[in-house]
Image (tube, rainbow, N blue to C red; front, side, top):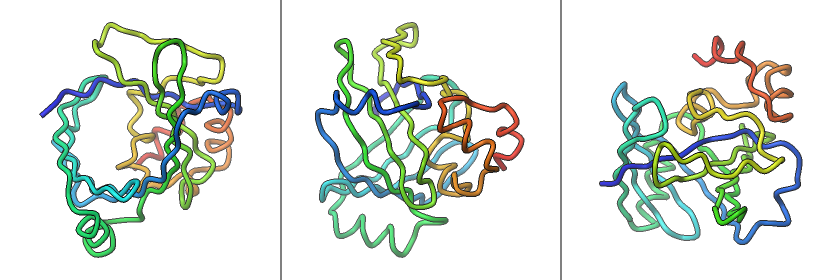
Length: 177
């Protein structure tokens, strides 16, 4: 078990691209989402993982993650997950001694780009490069489990355009379902 402390941001523009150090393809799906936890299966770079995350609001959440055989992860994705799979390219971007995970979504969530910054302490803020848009850590609509059930392509056009510009529209929360 670990406690994950992360901040999530919208991304604007492409200024982050020259700082990419690695990229990998990620496909994930959700086996269960309850009020208390989310159970996810992921396949990335031929490696399967099963994760259980607390649905705690805020920066810190308990997370349990276990490696599973890639074949099992693929079978779970195909046969057991609810809703569409969440597909993305995860870019690791170095900035001021920190590493951002910039997720460039595809499929039903194409056009959405988010950055996550894992921190050691909730009081830590981390760098704020110009390509970071608005912080959306506390807005559940941007979490992958929600994108699986309410994909970006179904958001109203004005909301999608705002997100592409790095701006969160409060009206979007009403549509989050």
